[in-house]
Length: 234
Image (cartoon, rainbow, N blue to C red):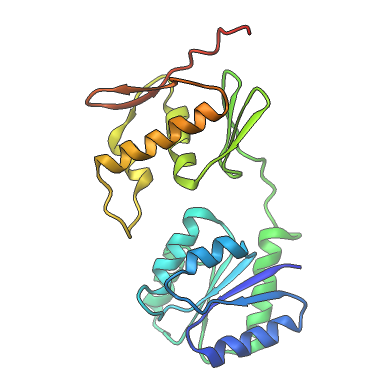
């Protein structure tokens, strides 16, 4: 059963959408804590999101950007804003479609089905999973997993981004500025200490799959991957 997440702060509209969509056999969840939208998203892992723009604290554009950091699932904006610029902003911030209020429930359903077909059904683009590999070390960015000699470790999104940067730059140095950009979250101020803390976590992840001392600190420049195990025959 495909999962739909509704992010709408008007409880009457949210209930109306939920009731109607469930008639078509979808599992629907309405967000009620608008401070923890991403926590709810990560828990549900929805196949599609219906997202209002006018929300408490942060607007829908902000939350769409956060979703796009971790997922490519379809996001349909539903808003009372009818301006052309609002629709442009929705698309530029990662949205896939835009519905204006008041809306027809049948139009909403048609757009939901269309986006689900494009993302997962008959119109979905078939792409092979990306894998980065260096001397037997494999990183699966979409899975957020890393493997080496039959050992596998799960990674956070930030750990995945940083390891991906190190592997893509190998044997060159991954610059501190590039790595800091990977850590950037508009909710937090990112400084040098943040990078150091996260790099410590990355090193621990390597250790969990049996690779020690593989991230070299290049003073004043950044970090470099040391593939010292490639000639190890044991």
